[in-house]
Length: 383
View 1: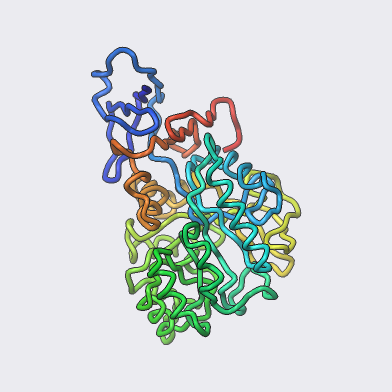
View 2: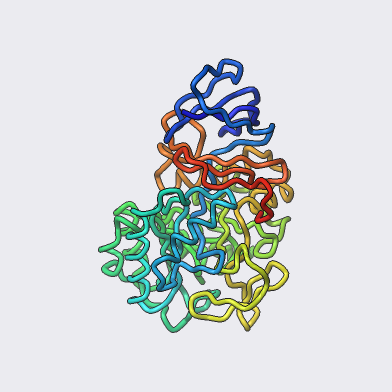
């Protein structure tokens, strides 16, 4: 049995001190640190913050690896490197490519899910494309965009936790009803939908918005678009808080409109995350990374190089939100969206011992997954 003491414990509601968290593979007890008895391996948190491990629901890669890579080791390599950023669980996110390549990626994800001990846990798959709109394709390859086809995802319903769709496309509303009815979280994104079309998607079962403000119709006072629907209806919103995809002032507006429970911080990171500037690729297209920005040759943003701990820090600075509320957007909020809040997302007895220790600047000092220390940031400059 282990325990962590001398911490600022982040709960869903507050930050508590003088508490110790006792755990093995699961969190067993939270007690006053002065009551710790013998026979427990005690970790001194050095007065730093302790929260549940971060959950990234939308990430394409990092450290030179991509979810669509044909190399069987790519996914485990991503899972290995993500722990440096405090991420303890994630959804590998696909790109719009040939259907056969997407299927192979799904098979690799399924295979790697069962063999990821000690690394960030793969929770399933986020299928971003190919059922999107060509006008708002972003960094997706237009050649492989197709109409919604529920038959293509049916064999993978045990794996796909989240899927992006453009609700204005022919056949999309029936697709949304079937997918949502099967337990998949359906997200509106990469869409040219009008306000009315987006609302129809919501009424059909869509409950989420893919990287809010990006690759969708904007808010206009005579055409509210997808953004207007997202603000008005009960939809959770992903946010890439790198201050490039979304201006800090707009992040603040989103917080005031949606509140702390309806925002989920994501990275949308691609393979250049954790690496230097240079030339990379995403979805089969060249990407040029410079000054923390990843762009196609035409200047369009192509994912990000954002790290989750940076996203939390940025959002706190931009909005003035409390630490515990910003952390919530990377822990319990994503856990609730995909229905795993009974096991992950907060430090509560009975939940998995997925934990992260970090300082006031969100520099990760230690990452623990399933009760095992998988990363220590002492003397490390990775984050």
